[in-house]
Amino acid sequence: MIATTPALLLQPDGQVEELILDSRRADQLRCIGFHVDDAHAYTLGRRAVVHVGRNRETVNNAARQAWMSVTSGSRPPILRGPVVITGPADRAGDFTPLPALSAEAVRRASRLLSDTFAVAPDVSVAQHIGGRTHQCDAFAVKRDKRRGRWAFAVLDGVNDSPEARSFAGTFAPRIARAAALHGNPARALAAARVQARNDSRWNFDPTIKPNAVAVVAVTDHRSPLVRFAWCGAARAYRLTPIGTAVPLTRDHSHPERWRARSRTLGPYARDFPASCLTQGPIGSGDVERKYARRLLLCTDGVYAPLEEQGRAIGDILDLATDAKDAATMCVGDAVKAARTSQVPDNATALVVDFPQH
Image 1 (tube, rainbow, N blue to C red):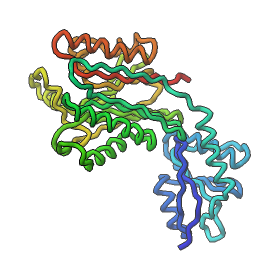
Image 2: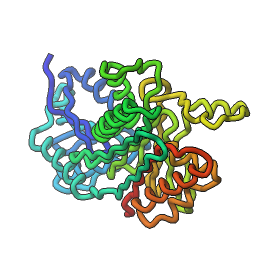
Image 3: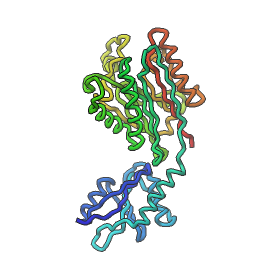
Image 4: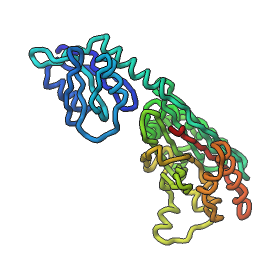
């Protein structure tokens, strides 16, 4: 078996991966079809062939830029979704290796697109220990410089103990780093689950005892979407253009189930998560960035006291002048509200303001 290389897979977010294609044409098409549904081939003169799907996915601006680089400026068709770029077909119908100069032009175009349009979001975090002995909330912000991708993670350690503090503090940066690298927050949580369950340092059975709940978000300037994932009762909100806060997550908690059955909740009902980092469901979703003026990731020490006092989180986010002001106000108002009826919990608010284009 003879392999042709390099063929390149170019994602809409600018990520470039090398593919190894079997010299037999049927296997080549099968490999291309694995990455590109209903592939259609466009010939780039004598230099390359672009294989692109006919669906309605995100426009692949990185591939369009690569097309213009390879053809010295000719206008490309609308390319959507993942794109595979190979060399031209020979007389037998087999695709030949993508010429080295063309491959380098594709990679250079992807890097150029990333360097030109990367604008950092405005990020700020506020925390308060509340009335607890330990700060068991943790957060992390990571950036993949190569792809210009940002990831944000907020974890809430279950219980007030050094072990809970250590667990959350260990996994927050791991999760954010994996989410920034791969662009998939649910995958980052799943990978952390495997690591936590296989790590012998913890003095508890992670398959039985709740340890931390989490919420993660990823933004990439080359994609119009903000992707998020969560487990347990840590939440994400988006601030709409009209100033209301819309929850993006839905709690994995026993209170959520009890409410659905019209059961009365006790004062500590929210302390019983139905999902955590090492067990239970992992939720995921996405939202278009243009519909999120501001993003809030927070623990229940922020949203629960405000909800109990009838305070609208959207009013706080809308009133704040910037991300720092929003995070500070959310935590300060939540701790003040909690003190009216109970001992305040750890409170953490991470706020992201996206660049306006």
